[in-house]
Image (cartoon, rainbow, N blue to C red; front, side, top):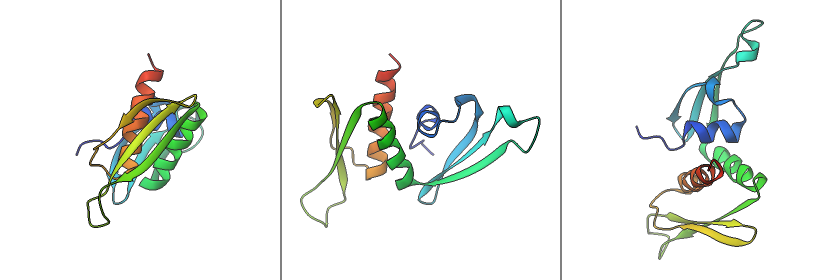
Length: 125
């Protein structure tokens, strides 16, 4: 299975240290994350399994972008409701268009993840 979201982006968006994310996988309409809280290892059960609805996770990604002063504008593309939906994502930084992802052939959450991954990579440079 190809990852729909990277471990690094999950870490940033969910505020879980990267080295604490043990594994994650796509489950029906969501993402399941297994992580170990290093600080709590001595005192209690440090192992967590959290499942996020894919749309909830996409919303958290959009909030993460907003908190980094980046606006994501997501709009459906296609000629009719019968078309397979795909999404256009515009990345705006200080009101200026930085990048546009079009013809992604992805559902909305996946398009948001792809745009946020781009933001994360640019942020780390």
